[in-house]
Length: 280
Length: 293
Image: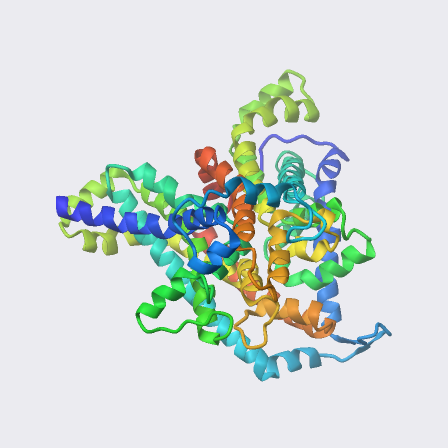
């Protein structure tokens, strides 16, 4: 019995090693100087240049992207992550409220139209989506960055599912007390949904922060670059340079993963709840 | 639907309007355009377009290059799906089995989920780098001269490795939560009936996990088809010439680099059909599962 358990632990430790080691190496390497990395390869030890590298990436202009600093890219990523998560929650709660709590003629049709959006991810319609954005002159704007990503119904289904599980008696009681649709929504449903909102906010924030393809298409102006979008720029600079700035590239990668990773670690329970319950 | 509902002539429309507006402008309009322009040949200098019927589809499906990319996409999708699902399941079963440290393992194993595919790709680039990459040195120990970015198969290997690495936590989370929802009474009964842990896994655990596993199968296939775009884009660095790419990447290359709007749209529509079929499978299955519950 003990022998078997030891084997289980060995498998798990190997798994943890494979998942964690690359990130640890990436972080440690980012504290070395570029020439040092070029000579000695990636490193598992502390290089002592943490402050310089991260200061350069965060504040000095003319790094990988020419004009823009890492801090600005973090700001843009935050706008995208928070804007996307908040927008998704507001839109989908309202739509789910209409679908579950109202009887109206076009309800079923609308429901199926929303449902259809689940079938086709953004990736299969990138070119026409880009054309549409061009026509609306929304390229290089925060609106163009955030709003088209909201055109998928995952959140709506999540809240629809949740609203359906809310006891009927609540609405009956609220109506006896004379509460209208607005009052019921704000005073009963929203407070009831608090945990759900938190869970879905975490999932959506990570999803928004990690967007790559859409920001790559939408933003050619560096002022709107997100951190993840900035990765592409690193690679363009990389081609043809003598000693690539490995340290700064790793630092940018670490910065790009830090906020979503922190959120997942800190709010682990909500994250797992949101993930396992929203994707079904 | 609720038994008790509000009845109001215009309020529901007000509530659903924002969602519908966004879906119309950013989902239906582009989708219809994709289908429409897939039947036209666009003049590369922007002077109108001619109706060409199905010839964009014929061009795409008939070209040897497209078929090669489609074959790679199938292999890539199958490998990424089965490897990440298999490793995720192995780790979840083990994390469920150990008594001590289970939650620590869980925390350490799930957080890679939060890393964006292109960031994972960037890290992969450096771990597989010719000069500094430790994995290249490791492969050299076994006499494997790995040339990621130059050699087709080596690049494919690196792409698959990175994509699987990034997806393991997702499968781990779902399978672990599936395992933990198996009632203790069922486990105990199984433990009394059957001493062999391996056999218990195949005859008790796996059938009970089947709905989760099937759901994950579809999700992983969509991941491998679409979400790996970031990994691929970072790892082939716009030089797709001799490098393995997937169908989605070809849509992107033809549409934005090659300016072949009609061809790219036709490929989009082909992909739409593939996803459509996959999703129908998924929903049919989920419906059945809801029925059982």
